[in-house]
Image 1: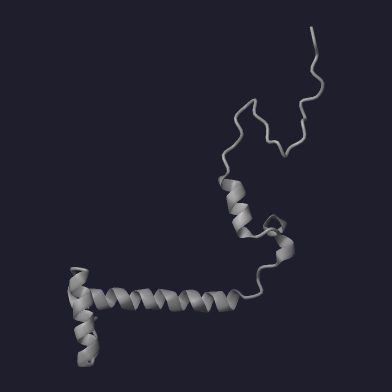
Image 2 (image 1 turned 180 degrees about the horizontal axis):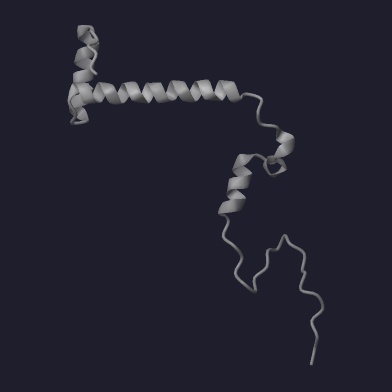
Length: 97
């Protein structure tokens, strides 16, 4: 199915320039832009519908914020034998021969 849409001359010229820069025909470029806007609109609608669905009490791991959680998860794991200076020593007493 194809639908024709009249585009005023000034925006059509701008679209031609942008499409040329992307090395695409005008129609392909405009269709890409339209789909991008449709997805953005759907996403915005979904966000509005889901407002209030998330409760902070259900996610204590985010108490210090999402960035802190991401930083902790990206931190490299300690190498065996090394210990995190913020963690208490849990190795117990060392027996001597």
